[in-house]
Length: 288
Image (cartoon, rainbow, N blue to C red; front, side, top):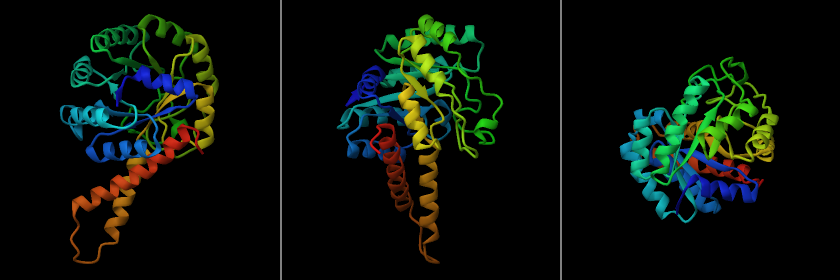
C-alpha cells in the first residue's frame, strides 16, 4: 500500500526501528526491494535520486514505482532522493511520489533554508512530506570520490542547535544529518558520532533523523544509530555491488560458446539484490 513518509516514520518511531530506504533506479532493483519487504512483512521506502536520471528517466521509472507501491502487501513510501531542482521535485510530486528530499546541503545556510521552505510549500499541495539535509557527507549521492569515508575532508557535521532553527523555519518532516557516514564504498572503518543524532533529536523535539551513506556500516553501528534516533536509513551501493558481483560470477560459469542471455543475468541480479536487501532490512528492524 502506498503511504507517506510521515506515516512510515510513525511506524518506525512506535517500533523504535529504522525503515530501509532503497534506491531503485531500474525495474530489477525495484522488484528486488519490494520482494524482500513483502517476504519479511516490513514497511519500506523505495526511492530514486536525481543523479540516477542517466540510468532510467524519472518519467519512466516513477509511475512504475508508484503503481507497484499501491499493489504491495506492505506499507511503501515512494520517495525522491537528493532532489536538486524545483522542476525535478515537482515532476516527482505530479507522478505521485509521497515524499521528496530537497538537498541544499552544499548551499549557504540561508539559501538552504529559503529553498527548503519552497520545497515544503510545494509538497504540501500534493499531500506529500519533505526530507532535507543539514551538514554534508562530502561526496554526492552517486558515491563519486575516493571512497575512504573518514578521509573525506569536505564533510561538515550537523550542528544540533542549528538543526533546531532549521526545522523550525522550514517545517520539514525528516532531517538527514551528517555524523560520520559517506556516500559510496568505505575503504576504512567510518568514525560515527552518535551524539550528533541524539542532540539533534533533543533540540528538534524528536524529528526523524535520516542516515545517508548506510552501505558498509557494521550491524553494531547501525543498531547504535537507531538507538540514538535514526529512523530512515538510505542504502544502495552494496545492494548494487551484490548484483554486479552475482552477474559477473554467473557469466564466468558460462561454457565456451554458450550464449549469455540478459534475462538470465537480470534474474541473477534480482536474486542477489533481494538477499542483500533482506539482510539490511533485518538489521534495520533489529531482527538479528
